[in-house]
Length: 426
Image (tube, rainbow, N blue to C red):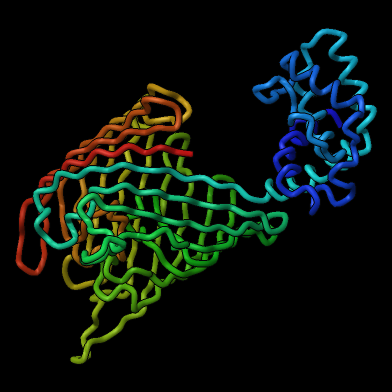
C-alpha cells in the first residue's frame, strides 16, 4: 500500500471538493470528533513542516473533517516523513493505524483513477513562426506568420488497438479574428478535431483507418496530405514491409493535383533494407479520374510510380533521393534530393542538424506531396538550406532560406523565402 500514498494524497483536493458525494459518501462529513487526538497530531506535523498548514500554524483551523479527508492528509504525511526523526515517524505510524481502513479505500480509488489515466496519452507542440516571403502579395502566401498548436491524443481501446485524434489551432498574425466586432472574420484553424483514426493489429497485420495525415515514402513526395482512408501493412521478411492503402484526399484546395479531392487513390508501398546503410522505398498507385464538361480528365494522370533511396554516406551524413513519375502527358515527374548532417534530439540540449534540399515538382508529377506549409509548392523547383537547433530540452528552433522558380497560370516567377520557427514540445 505504501507505493500508493503519494497518489492517494492527490485526492485531498477531491475530498474537500466533493466530500458528501462520491469520495465521502461512505462516512459523514464530521465523523472525526473535534476533540479527537488526530487533530492535535496533525497540527504537530504542520509545525514540524511535514505537511503544509494555514498561516496561523494550524490545519484547517480546527474544522471538523471526514475520515476520508483525514486519511488523505495522513497519506501525504507518510510520503513526507521518510527522513523525519523517530518521534515524528512514530506519530505518523499511529495515524496510519487509526485510518488504515480509509487509506485502503483511497488506495483502491486511486488505482481505478490511474488505470483510466493510463488509457489516455496527450502530446504535441506549440509553434511560433515567421515568414519573409517575396510572394506575400499573392493570395494564400500571407498566412504563414502565426502561432500554432498541434495536439494529439492516443487512447487505449483494447490490447493492440488505440483510438487517436489530432487537433490543430492556428492564429495568424496578419489575419483578422472573427470575434472582434466589425471585422471580416477569420479562416484560421479553430481547434476542432481535424483528424480521427484507429490503429490496431490483426495477427501480424497492422491496420490503420480513419481521417488522418498520411505520408508515403521517405520524403512524402508521392503523397503527403490529409485523407480519409485505410492501410494494412506487415513485415513479410526481416527488414522489409509491404503496405496496401486506399485514400481519398481532403482539403481539395490544398491538394497538388487538379480536383484532387474528387478522386480515390489505391496502391502498394514496399520499404526495406538493401544493406547495412542503405534503404529503399517503392510505390505504385492508381487513381480514379473525373472529367470536366468536355469529357477531359481533370487529373491528367491515372498511375504513379515512385522509387526512393536513403543511405548513410559518411559519419553523421545521410543522403535521401526520391523520383516519382506518372502517366501524364507533361510535367509528369517530381524529384527531391536531401542531404542531412547530424540531427536534433529533443532530449539533448545543444544538439543540431544542418540540411540542404533540391526539389523539382512537376505539375502532374505526384498526387500531393507534403508542401510543408507552402514552402514546397507544386509545379516548382529550387533549393532549401536550413538548420535545426535544440537550445533547451523539448524546444526546437528551425531556420531556413529557399530560392525557387514557381509556375502558375500566369507563367514563371521567382520566389525567395526565409522562415524561422520555434516549437515547444510537450
